[in-house]
Image (cartoon, rainbow, N blue to C red):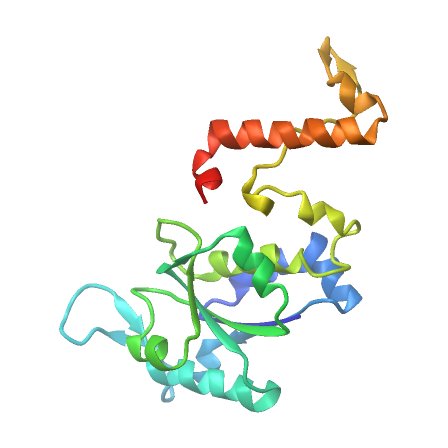
Length: 225
């Protein structure tokens, strides 16, 4: 999978994409991440990428022309693909969307800044608008990183054990069950006996029950979904 990320502050993306699971996936050739500095497509000698709002009001707006030129440049080199914009008023991001989007070959992700991007980009160039929650960030880079991480880990081969992602929270609309590791007894805080039994069917049933209990207690809205 290839992610093309357009950013006004590309340095914000470098470290998180250069370590741990994402870096290993890139080294294996399972994931490619191309970062575009929007200033390279800016207007005029100053490479301007933002301007004041028409109609007045506080805050700058990312201009249509640099974003258009950047997207068209990506299209010309790699072909058409879906363009995603991370924005507080987009559809709420959920695990089911991550599952669906992990089947795609490539995406363009636009990271907004200031008061957002010119509406004409949203009207004519953006295919998907997505929100990671009901709050506002200083820029879209952190949200883009969340999308990349949550989607990439579902690509076969990215995780050492492919079944790991399938037992995460929100798969099948359930929270994950409790997990334990060694030692089995720490200060008389003991691991449930069933997990030490070696009985796969009993362990599976225990985990399913605990996942349901946790979801009913903490996120009953998931069961309604």
